[in-house]
Image 1: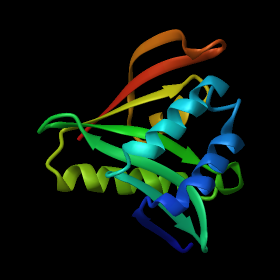
Image 2 (image 1 turned 135 degrees about the vertical axis):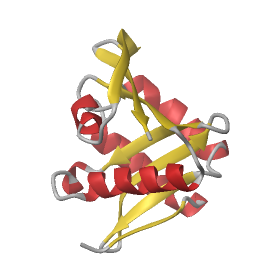
Image 3 (image 1 turned 180 degrees about the horizontal axis):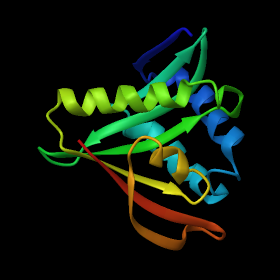
Length: 146
């Protein structure tokens, strides 16, 4: 498996928006697309894309909240690359990044559809908000303690 991670660049925007579309409405509420587009336009210093065999298979950001905590933000994975280890590679990379920054916790906000994936990586549910991301899309707050 040939996986690499690189800093998001403006030229990756179309591929990232396509990733969003591939994951909507199963993993993201349709109303979140404008937020994601706006995010890509201005908050990408710590955003990365995952290259798998020459294709952008995923994208994610790990943002410092303070000296001991960070947040996994806008993690997307193409359904074409699910169940072959790419998502787990992204999570392991995020954990390595967090540990390298001496972070003690990674906060995650996900949906009722995806939270089981994060549980596999030792994330614990801290809060559930019914329809927190939009109608039918509950928000599940989680934390990975390092």
